[in-house]
Amino acid sequence: MTRKLRFEIKSKDVAGRIGKVEINGKTIETPAIMPVYNPNSPVIPIDELQRVFGAPALMTNAYMALKNEELKKEYIEKGIHKALGFDGIIATDSGSYQLMVYGGVTTTNKSIIEFQENIGSDIGSFLDIPTLPDAYKPRAEEQLDITLKRAKDALDAKFLVNAGVQGGKYLDLRKKAAGEIGANFELVAVGGIVRLMEDYRFSELADVIAAVKSTIPTNRLVHAFGLGHPMVFGLAAALGCDLFDSAAYALYAKEGRYLTRDGTKRISELEYLPCSCPVCSSHTAMDMQEKDLAMHNLYVTFEEIRRVKQAIKDGSLWELVQIRARSHPRLLAALERMVEYPYLAELDPITKGSAFFWGGGESAKRSEIVNAKRRLLNVESDNLVHIAPYGDIPAELSDIYPFNSTMMPEENEIFGTARDIEKIKKIMDYQFGKGAGDLVPGNVKIVRSKKTRRIRRIYYKNELIASIRASDHMILPKKLLLDKLHKKFEKPRLRVVIDDEAVPFVAEGKSVFSKFVTGVDTDLRCGDFALIVDSKDNMVASGSLVLSPKEMLDFDRGPAVNVR
Ligand code: GUN
Ligand code: ZN
Image 1: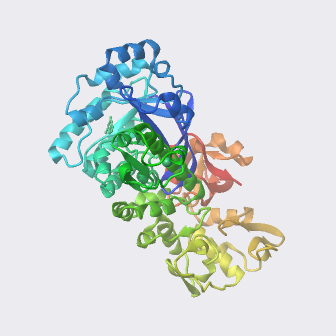
Image 2 (image 1 turned 60 degrees about the vertical axis):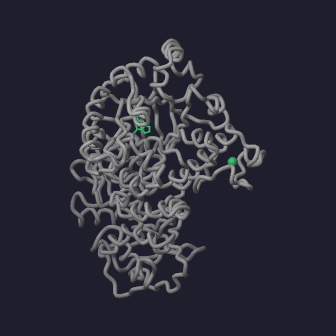
Image 3 (image 1 turned 180 degrees about the vertical axis):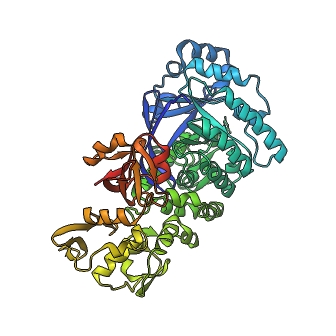
């Protein structure tokens, strides 16, 4: 595979990520939305897409250009960037959409690939067949075989291939397709989902995305093909989609439809505008023309992407998805389905910057609770306290995340009391495993914060052996405890193994970059504190994971562990 994509993770929440993505020397941040530009009926001109909306990338149709002699000539002569007057990332589609809508196209896979190479697309597509969700299974299989054959023709394409995964609603076919596409392409496009979207079949949409995501390596950029309605961005991003494209803003405008983050309205039925974008601030519903509607639609589209990104930064993406799920029962059904996918708990950070907000029954299965319940198995205690929704938990743990920052409809009143030394021992067990607490000597000296009265530092015979992380009250062990953990828990437990080449840098306190991670305890989670060892299991340093174990093995760019 020749590499055309540079991708690293800046922030994570659920299976969503803020990515720094570089394609052909152009950098964008994901999740990102690519507005679709239709040269045959440009509702919003390109310079406005760039100037007003700051679109860093757009998508247009190479097949339509190929079938229009004038455009074809211009694109080939000037290159598509000059021809369109856009210097950001240009993604082109292959005519697959026309294949879906009209049942056929008059080009071949090889010619449309070659055309996209000739016009200089940054991202291009092969002619995948967008199988309809309900296609008869043998037909879905047959079409998938053709799609996968066509994918092979694009292996050496000059552009970054937007490689379509098809298979209709059949998850076994989706997984088979994702296995092949994910092994060979850096950008995986979940295709054939427009109909699911249009019909509000969000549970099946979630199933399809999850089938793909749980099959492909975590460092593949994921495009949800044709997913342009802001009401599903949160859900799709939480499942791990990075790129979206929207023809919807223009198509809906043509039909007099007004997008909102919780659904679609007919402009003819609106007396009041529930939006303060520049268009809605200066128009009434009555005097909105097609272009005005398209502008509004795009404003709310970009706005929701920004909201999703902020939620990822804050650690509140589940909360955003919960809120959106209340705008449509089918979105709620999708969320109820989504909490069942095991890969989310593997990728979701174990500690977050914002409180756990209960949003309804489905919250009981969120990844924070799945992960907490697993860790609770490490801890034995007779001193129990009831903290909803976790049940009876050791009172010694009631200060740590998530138990200390869970917002339920009714207040969790009875917080436990426990001796400091017991707290420290049980938190050690919770974080590192059964028996970790026994490593803490009995006669330690505890220093509290003057302001909050919480435990801050733990000394043994004047040596600092641990401090407490203020954000979540977890324990950060120092040398004496680290050595004991290293001795008690055998390889690979609690460890990130790094390439010997990186040892001198990490020993100095530099971050561990994922490129240098050669092994890791898969029970660790992003946010966990871990031991960093060399190939011979000598301890090099310690630090907090900023990626999940899978990610640090898959990615070869960006930091994996923040070294203390
Ligand atoms: N546009 C919307 N859906 C699809 C798809 O599945 N494949 C391609 N190539 N384009 C699309
Ligand atoms: Zn508006």
